[in-house]
Length: 124
View 1 (cartoon, rainbow, N blue to C red):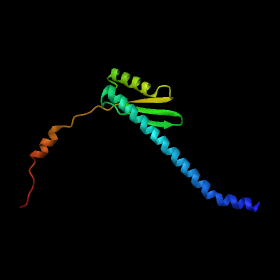
View 2 (view 1 turned 120 degrees about the horizontal axis):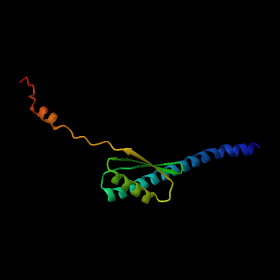
View 3 (view 1 turned 90 degrees about the vertical axis):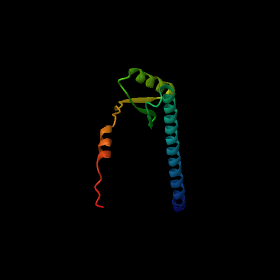
View 4 (view 1 turned 180 degrees about the vertical axis):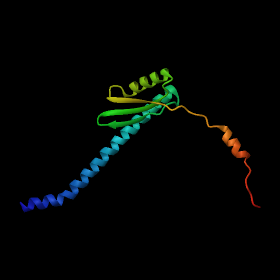
């Protein structure tokens, strides 16, 4: 009995190290899978629409979660995003989350002009 306990204690560092390495490898493969799926979806969306949307792809359990900010004022574009996501992910279980894309507001040029006209205070 003492020999069995001694062997278990001697083998435990090796078993723990092997378990940690396997866990790290699994996490790395999962992350690489997420990155490759996101690149594939981004390439497909950019080929179809141009650089208008940028998806974020995550794997939660066995379901892919795709988050895309889209301009909801353009239903044709939203439809193209839906079609492209379905083509890329096919029969794999996925969850698509569409968010409203914030409109781009132009920066007021008047501020830059006003700053350029200000005189610098110099004591020399």
